[in-house]
Image 1 (cartoon, rainbow, N blue to C red):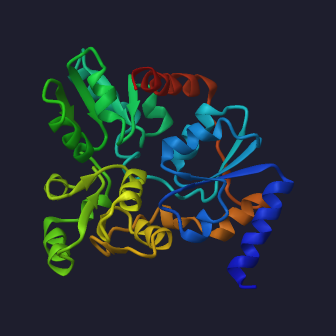
Image 2 (image 1 turned 30 degrees about the vertical axis):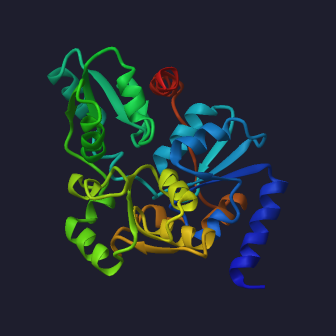
Length: 305
């Protein structure tokens, strides 16, 4: 038995013994996905965790994802497998900065991408995911929208909602903005028969060239269900490998070798083991007032979408 397989067996045995559920974001490594109870995008994981019977949860992802899980399941013990795994986009705005922006745009409905901290969510009116943003924003009565924090995702959604007056804040995902129009031209030349699938956090000039734009799971579902045999993947490069395993009869190419999220890659299989052994990770705690205020923006998302 390999070292990886042996560690996976330890994890599977311990999680059952100690009543743990393991959540893994799609950007995690294949070896972590193999031991997870749930795999998916950030909000979907947090929502599904509410119905899981286990009282303890390990989030293999980044901090805001663990916070959202705790927000929705306050009775559970939620652990972030690697405490240094943050999200630069979620940390681009702080409470004071958003408070000042709200003063600059009085009367605007503040719409927050789910990739925000619990503290920021307390100042927001509604949350959205990359796949639900258009539907939810279109259902907001107010035409004036302040969208935070990803201006690239916001720009993509703004073009689909010309009836709304959407103000964007400078910021975005440092991983997805690494992909450029030159990368698109290079990839198209190398793989002329491939479809280009990209995440809406990419630069506007990249999404404009795509055959499909969608969330991470949207990209994966599209590739799996398509009759096409070749795809250029414009999101975190772990998705290329996951799709190669899932669809061995198809070809997948990374739009850019530099599209790597170092925060997602911070989590290792041994990190997960250490949480189960009680000698690693970090239990997430939220002040109850902050939790309830932040949760309101998610409840409004559910109501509108």
